[in-house]
Image (cartoon, rainbow, N blue to C red; front, side, top):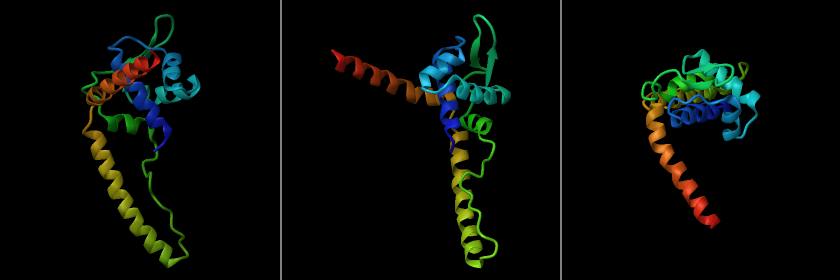
Length: 148
């Protein structure tokens, strides 16, 4: 998987936590720790796929295009992952052993990839937020407590 999927999950998670308040790409980039250029590239793909909407100009920013309960993680993955043969091996055609072994490995990888996609499809952004947000709050509380 590419880092674009991680960035995309951060974007949809952060937008969910903001409850419909538009967030700028600069703010999103800062919260993820990447450059605004990288983040905007991922944001553009999410927008093209209909996962987020973005308004330009003063007071603009990005929001989820629909309810977090209607967006699943597979949609986010599909939006930012053009080549979904993530684990595919390319065997050497002039080597029978490599070709047979490569074919077998590709079968295993296809099964693993299908299981991953099925799992991502079963999780909504709202469900992700319900798991992640309490962990973030707990982590922040621990850091604040340790600074005292």
